[in-house]
Image 1 (cartoon, rainbow, N blue to C red):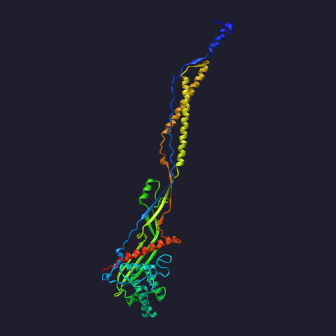
Image 2 (image 1 turned 60 degrees about the vertical axis):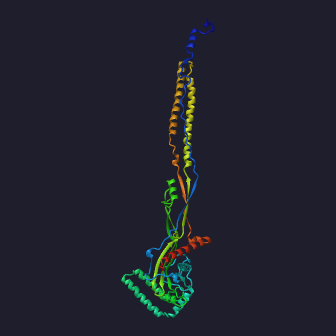
Length: 463
């Protein structure tokens, strides 16, 4: 038996001590209780930044032959050329005294009834001569014809008096046309000015006028004896003639637009739907006179442009640049980081709960009921806090995992579209100090003139 008195502890004190001893808490959880599992985030894959891509387009506009319109030529019913008889022909060519075709500023010739009678006019006559020979004519040398023409003119004794009478006759004819309404007042003024200018300049020199009667007499003379005279009414050439060509409809361009729907044909910016380029244009008009009868046996006009004789190529390129992927990837990185942080917080709470659940599955002793009540309250509050964290983070992570991943649809591009380059380059201003371009343009123009003349001469009726 314990002697409390001997120990110096009174029974009352012992009762108090025993009354304040530890209290045992019952188990709150069974052994092995597991905390909620955090939702694992499915991270968004960053997009691959697309490198700038250059696409080159080459559009070929194939040469389109153009036949002479039926309304642009006529043959005399009474005549047809017998090529087997080797007919001879002489050329009467109109000129512009300021600048001839293939010379000067390339602006072409005005329509004029002036016929130069001294030597070759220029390369245009040489082209016409070649095509006449190719057609089947024998072409009389200009020098021989010129000599006979001089003799004819000098022996015709056309005095100023006679010229004045001719002028008066032509003036009356012109006035009659105006009075009858055959010509307008504007045309009357223009033709009157030409008639007056012709009257004043009837002399040998650079701007001679030759009546067809003189040409016919010279063509009939011994040593020439031409069967025909080819009177050229017009040889006009235009450089920089505007030609509109389409881009819209080209297969490669249309496929590119299908793959890049944000790109459109140009309004202010975009792919050009068409373009205009400067090319050459030749107008050729002529009459064929039968020397013996003076009859016009054939008359015609024709015109061609560069695309009628040569392929034209247009090229341009588009550089496609990715302008949004970097920004989108920054957005994706921020969302992934936020999801990772939420998952980390949930995992920390999971580990904390695991420890608390283990502790709650054991008996816990406290000094007294008050201490028990306070500590148990804190224990349960901590559990609830971590369970709430996991629940909240899981809700956040589930929402993150359900986020649409269509970031590729948000990618935007910028397009740099170059100017069109047209070949052949038919701008005469670009041939300076470039012999190759100069030669290319010269050959092209010769080809264009030759084809225009050849096509028109082919309409002459032959036996």
